[in-house]
Length: 84
Image 1: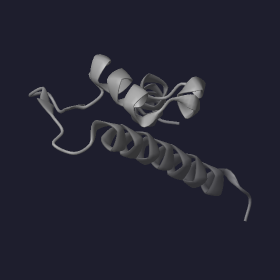
Image 2: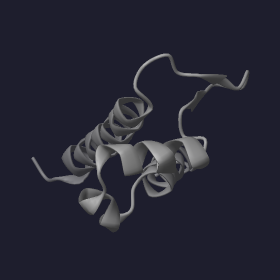
Image 3: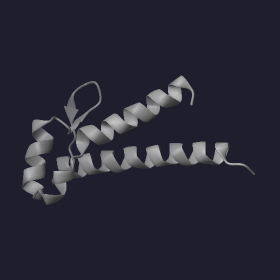
Image 4: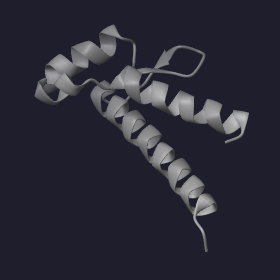
């Protein structure tokens, strides 16, 4: 991979790791909300504004988006390296 691609993959993995822990699946929605707010995972962009949406939903959407981009990147690489 090119350096920029490696950096993009690293950023996606970092995003997922920062937002998800295996024990989150046992948390209640309220407990997850407290976690998201404490870790400031509801903050959007460099201007530090908070999402107006549900912070738990926002966090979940960010995880899924990063995971989908990571899978897409892997799929593209796989197709490029696979023999025809």
